[in-house]
Image 1 (cartoon, chains in turn cyan, green):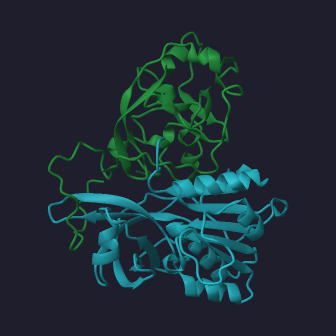
Image 2: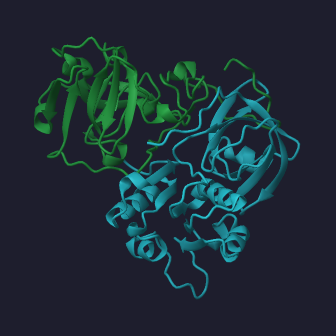
Image 3: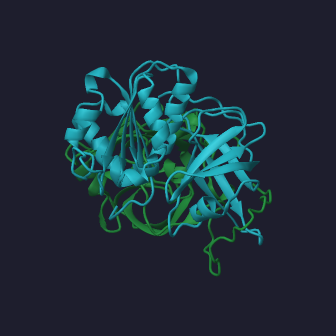
Length: 252
Length: 202
């Protein structure tokens, strides 16, 4: 098992919101200024702490969306209608506001630019966020590892970073992007809406013989399904890294 | 910890009239999220066994039938995951670690739980004793599903839930502490939720 960079004590820092921008109807990117940010690895996350006027506070974890770049950090927050924290981050928080951050956290679900092997990224919904950090880190550092992203969303409208992904996959840098839609497909789309299955994986993902490292991130059911498909297709489970989030969806 | 946070303008939080007593930084979920670092191993009970290995290399091993013939307890416990969710009043069935360690000759002070699929997590041996830990085979009256760590998982509810190793296949007893999987990549070596020991240095 790879060891991570050694982390010192992680203290709470007060970031300032530099800007916000909508990614979709329900998702927003928050650009943060963080003095003395130590940098981070692609795939890591931060803890966010909100405090109410009466002193009540609550914490959540959010993946970092941006490549390491000085004191700038970007998070993309998907609004969960009955959430306690995401509605505030995605609707209320504005430029100039403070936001408490602790991190970076995580040393397993990370990609380091010096790794030479092909990389297979598979995202379900907002699971694309830490994978985008990997794509951006690769691009920023001119890394050579070939990247494939398979990105499953409800429909085209729900996809984050669409323009940037189009540019990055058209600039000849060795990134290819395949979209999979579960509910609504554009006109003349070659596949009916549905879950990622073995056929799509065989078509869109690196073959096991290429010995890629795979990063799969999304809701639990999505990750369970995709990780199982990868193993069935002959990928070594030790080369599949997963990050599951959200409700378990059913009986444990 | 202990610092009053910066007030978040326009944030009021959930109504907290009867908030249960949760460890710092945790929130309540009714759900049962799944978090794992890789694909879910699927281990048949025919292939399953559980062993305790002492610091001198002696091994005691149980197959599924032998293990299920042991006396089980039904602990109802609260779970606290380092990713911030807490789930209260979960009911499990399992064999207390004392039962498995009875008659094992050891002077070890540390233990590493080892799982099918390669996961490991470390803890002081005393945290496995005195009714604080079980090898659980049922959750909510049903066999534990693979996604939640079945056929059997370690249950150590007084520590963050990553210490409750899924797909457990054994415990190794050690004279010296040996960081496990998450403990090697930035997570706290001990992981007491009430002291918010999430990460290195907490």
